[in-house]
Structure formats: C-alpha cells, structure tokens
Image (tube, rainbow, N blue to C red; front, side, top):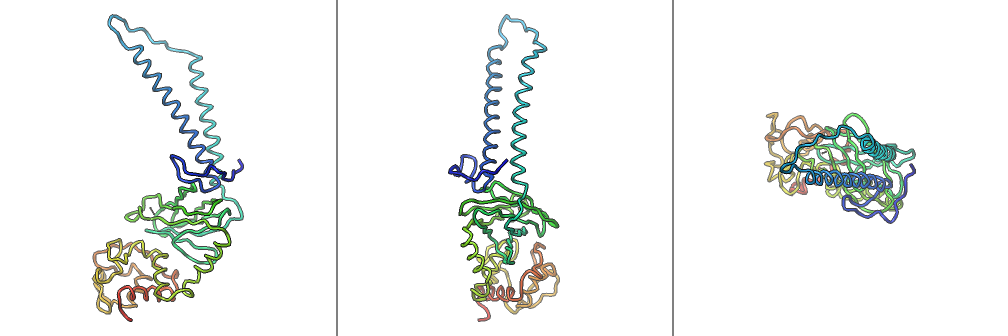
Length: 328
Ligand code: CUA
C-alpha cells in the first residue's frame, strides 16, 4: 500500500491527537473501522437478544417449546459475514503494520538511549540532547537502545512506539510532514520515575534544523562553564534524579544544604570512607556512581565514564558550585 501524505484532515479526533506522521491517517482509519464494526454488532446482537428475551419470555399457562437444533442458512450467514469482516481487518492491519514496521532506506538517523529516567538523543554529528528534534518531511529513523531496563518509546501524535531493550538496537521510523511540537513518552513501566519519562519532539524545517543543530552542538563555545553545566545537567539525564530546588527525588538533591553535603568537608557514604566533598568527589560520583552511595540512597545510576568529556565535567562542577555559592 502506498503511504498517503497527510491532507487537510490531520486534526485531532475524538480518540486521538493530531495525525502528525504520514501513516497516522491509516492507523486512525483502521481504528475507526474496527470500532464501528464492533459498535454495529454490539447494538445488533444485544438489541436482538434483549428483544427476544422480552418477546419470548415465559408466560402463565404456556408450555416450554423444544428449541430448533439446526438452521443451515442462518448458520452460514453468521459464519461467512464475520469471516469476511475479520479477513478485511487482518488485510488492512497487516498492510498498515508493514508500512510502520518496514524502515525505509536513506533515513536521517538519530540514536536514542533510554535510561532510568530519561532520554538521550544523539545526532549524526555526535551532539547529545534530552529533546528530540527532527527535520520536517524527511524519513527519520530512531536507532534505540537502553542503558538499564526495558523502556518503550512512544510518540502518540506519530502513532508509533517500540521497546528500547538493553544490549540491542530496535528501530522505528516516521516522516512528519508539518513543523510542530509533540510529546514523547515512555510506555513501559520502568520504576519510580516512569511517569515523568517524557521529552519534547520538535519538527523543524530543514534549514532551521541544521542551524539549530550547529548552534546547539557547540555547548562550550556558546556558554560560560556555569551555563554549559546547567545545559548538561538538563540534557544528560542528571535532572531525572537530582533536583536543583531541594526537592526529594531518586538521588540526592544538588542543593547541598538540603542533602547534608558540606563543601570541602567529609561526606557520609555507604563505604564508610567518608571522602572530602570536593571536585574529586563529584567527578568520581559521575564516573563510578556504584563505588559508594550517600547514606540512605540505593544504587540507581549508570556510569558516565567515556560519555562526558573533561570539559563537560568541569562545566557541571562549575554549575554545582555556582548553584551552591562556593568557590567564587
Ligand atoms: Cu522508562 Cu517507563
């Protein structure tokens, strides 16, 4: 089946959000088709059943009559019609499924890494963000995996989703004809932060997309270390577990006064080593989060060794120091 490009009928329906990918219209059409068949048969069967129950109810002075055992023409009708209907549903279901699952060649690829609890999107130039931006009206392929448990990436407006599985890649593809913003969610229960595992999806005209990617990639060139650190905090997943307003999350808050951390003083950790809380401590916590934990917290973080440059780590440390008013 050829994939129809979206026409004017791409607005939200009662059941679904905007049809924002090329195959969204097909998915909605099949959903409506199945729903209306179900509705018609529900009314027909329940209606006739109720009517007969009343019409042939047991009355005073009437004996129970023997039921007919067989009616060939009636049985043919109620076997053949549903068979045709489910065959049609299967045919369209299979065709549309193949359109969605068969990834075309020559796609714009974005690597997706899911983790507890957030998303990393990596573009062909190596740039990593926590939001997904894609060029408008081009075939985009997401090459997806997970750092820890099974997550599932779902973009409701595109009508597509697939699991992100540790140790392997899975793929989805889409083509979004119009510029706009959409939401992306994790749709596989993955622990405490599951319900907040969302990200913004922005479809941009190609030249705007290229300009954004170029500017956004140069995180250190365009920002002070403090601002670069803040961007890294937001983009690289720190924000999924560590608050900067003192509120309790999976990991200790980065507001040190609230987490019991005192700059350049010993920090109580599970190993009993109680290291001095300084730049070395922060760097080690990023590289080897499993080495020791702040008392009262459980292991939850994957290592960032090899994923953040020294410049990145320096910027994150600068941001944390600035946030807590030390070292200035
Ligand atoms: Cu990740 Cu639910």
